[in-house]
Length: 235
Image 1: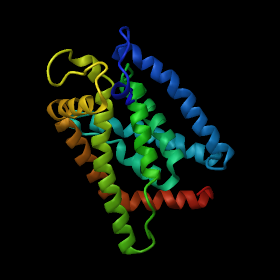
Image 2: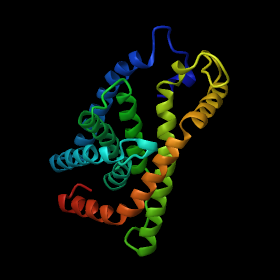
Image 3: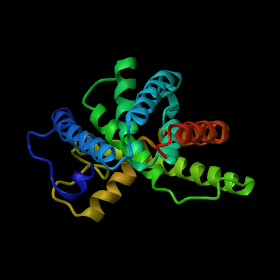
Image 4: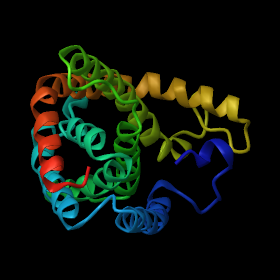
């Protein structure tokens, strides 16, 4: 998704035309991740069933946020599930959850592949967070604090990644415009300025919503998901 910072888009490439290409590249990536997880024992039939259930839950809770003022109700569950079940599971859930929610809410469009990939990285990162002594009260509090900080940072980063999907085509002039062939430092500073002016309010709203939901539901959902993982004997 960071290609605009590294290479100039072709003349015929737009947000609308680049989406299908990204989707075509994303499907083999998700398939390869699932195959690796299956062959290495990271996913079995019970884990796949859990993936389906959580994807449906993500799709069901998304309309409650509807993206108004940046309010998003899907990322907290992706973060918590990625934390419990690991980075591979989190990556796949980020893709399947956003895809299912788009079908449910009518949010299918050229932006969907970017949403799926960015959400996949949110789930992947949650699974890569360092471990804590979750069996103690202090450890549980520390884990929640860690997840809250990650929720805030990943929510802002998600917005930044989504801006990359259309920012090169949004403006052709001005200090916020993408400079074809410009250096990484130049275009990155323009992207940050563009994001600050146009979408920071939405990104902060997403961050606040996700942090609040992680803190409110985390203590219960982490226990429930870990109990399900122990009973299924895949984690």
